[in-house]
Length: 599
Image 1 (cartoon, rainbow, N blue to C red):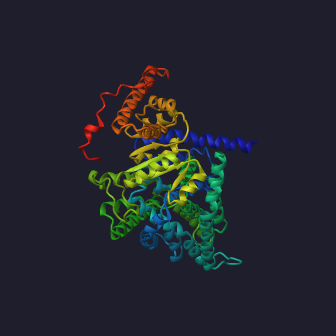
Image 2: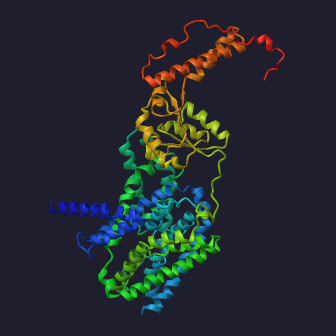
Image 3: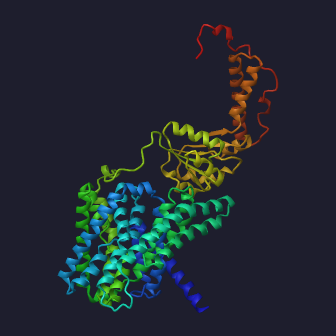
């Protein structure tokens, strides 16, 4: 019971610090990440001591990075990943080697380390913080740009480099090991684990989500989403590999599945909370006594590390075709030490290569560099990116093709939605189709069409489907649905977005119109009018008279609908309904049009 009350008290302290500091930092445009770090420093052992055991909190909060990499993987289709291979394996490899070796040389100059100790510290310092960088890019809506993709390519290779770096630390270790594991065994484990994750993500998980989606069990779907993330992380952790890398591979394998948007929506709340807790734990782990005792060396190391990494990354990015302003900006964005540095420093300490105080000091260097990055990146964005270049994209070209008619989010892919989709494709319009029917999704996939699973009336699903950049939103849902709770938040957040809706019947059409929609189509109206025309033609009615009858019916129907929308009474305008033969003597005589050739 006492443990439970302590845990509850710690949770209250965490939340209180976040609620107070994060909005304050956001208000002064310092960024949420810096607010989380400040909250961790404030409540940590070095300042107030309200919460202790930063290492345990950090181990738990690392799941925030796991969830982040899974979400990133969901947004990167394998074809997109293949398009970035030059940046991942070319620029990423060059960055890890150049920064790691450059910092090794810096440590040899500033410290009394042996070359082995300098190497096992310099290589980890060459890594950057995936969690911090991606959070900063997402805050500024830059993750999907070429700048963001090039930055992420380097981060992804750094995750791949964890295994070789652990191998280097193990090879240089001075600690006696009973049964040392050869490096090739660890590499074989890595390849085997990745192959297994690819197979499971490609063949097993989509079928699992299809079964759960067919049953409509929302809680089970959320549980399955978390299971896929944590299961992949557990597999990699059991082999001593990067949990985040396993989650990323699982995400990439599900990126082309129809459940991508629903998965991203359900994971997002957990990701946000856990990532915030991770940054708090980083702030808590900062030992101010070590910083104060070695403030001169810590300051020199922070400045030296960030300067070496900024210069190296900027030079590499420039050599890969990035504009020099963006190259410097990229260098400052990736100049900090990374979260995996804590892991590698601990391994180096266990290997008797560095002392405990040295591990603490370099942990402080990483934390300080992470705290400085949001400020430096914000200044770099202001100074180095002119307003005219704000939207410029450099580096690798986008793998997708530009659509001629923009992008449309289509909710409902049944009988009506499929017709709409074909007409939009004929215009070259990009479509993101959403439907709740898993069986329908499988059927449309056989015809080469992609439909994503999810509830398209939920704002969070629509947001992940790209409604913010859409040219139009189309509701082609079968049956009646309450428009007010669905449309009100959409129209409030995107007031200029055109919304076209399918109405089940006249009553539903009135409800949609009263909710604020102007473009509403009753699903049976056009087919009924077409059938009426066919019947009239079968009775020998002249074409011009059929046109006149249709025009008169539409005029009366629209007039009555307007009156019903205003009054809210279905009986309003009942006297306008056609109840007998109309006087169509004013209709043009079809014989008088004989000299005009048919269209």
